[in-house]
Length: 446
Image (tube, rainbow, N blue to C red; front, side, top):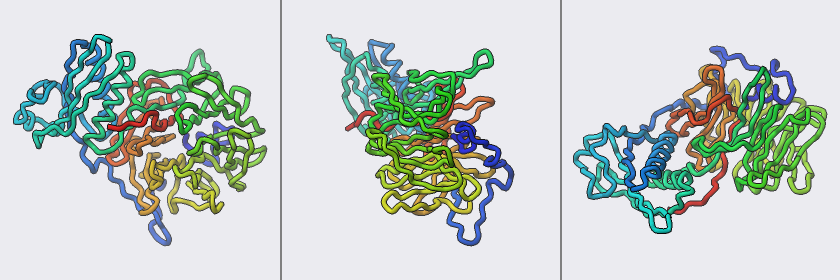
């Protein structure tokens, strides 16, 4: 959540921390000891244009479902645009059917095609290929077998395959997202903690409440979610087992219990507790319940997030008068501010390699998702929207999902970190906040 909204959620007055969106809000001091380099490069890298030919199969329903899933996933990658069927020279499903001279006159750079068959045991087999139009050669081809009961899962799987073949990067289409959806009926608000596929399909309600829910976070094995609930009249932190439905109360201290974040080994939660005083960062051993305070400051420290190697925790603090990002080194017990001479930074997360940090920053008078390189100290604006909130990085580090304003509602959008192309997740409808991307659920080897 944006820092000021989080303060309101944990029963603080947000008015003292609200940063006005004025022309000066996006300006940065470039003199003195400034270490901030702004590099706004939205859309510098051109998206790849590809064509997904209709998959051939006697089972038309399965073929159409897979075709739709793959097209939509590759669109949501932000790295690719799909050619419309009317702009395709033909609809091949075998290599010998490709008319390369005709395809070179189209805008497509790659062609994905395939054929699906079914055996007597009602098991499916798919022969899928990726053709390089310019070279006139097959880039890669694979035969996969799948159970028809898991067609949607298989669609995500082959989307990861195609993405890997074309870009050389791991895909994250077979992962999940978690988010809080707010609804209203007869003047009263209701809250649902929901998990869904990375494309927003197959929503499943994990928790329902007529009191606020917030701050979902996935365990490293993707089997549990921790979150904050106000169902007991004040904030509590719970861990929910997704499969069994069992949950564990983690904190019920007086005052603030908020913003849980899993350590990479899954044994510890970084949380925000006030213990009846100021909000600070604590580390809680999940098994024993023992906790350790790691920040001590008269102002508010919140929104902790771990580095992937488990050696550092970054967090938001207003100790300089405005929300900024700080990094706590667990080994040396040292705290340093990450970005200097900027007006507002919050909701930070390390990327998959600990080389960059994704966060919300005010640029050009807009709350936007940005990426901060820890070595070069360059800031790259990722989102093309404004009033952005609660960014979460995909496990491959290639994309960011976040909440943003669309009219009066909060909706979900996905942006690629290198192109900065924001795509709305239209399959998720309603007023949505507090989104979190899961780790990898399956390990693929293509």
